[in-house]
Length: 75
Image (cartoon, rainbow, N blue to C red):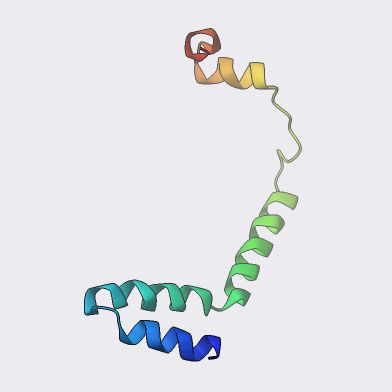
């Protein structure tokens, strides 16, 4: 039995409400990846054109900026 035949058999045995989950999953794996690629390229372009790109903040400075007491949350 092929994977497609097995999938169809399993789908035929699903209740209607569970079928919605399968449809959503199948739509997700069939989604157009070019839209994702374009989004990621835009993020990279935005970063590369940013004036504050490359500014490094140490962990300790980030903790201070956020007002967190790191000793209070460590166990």
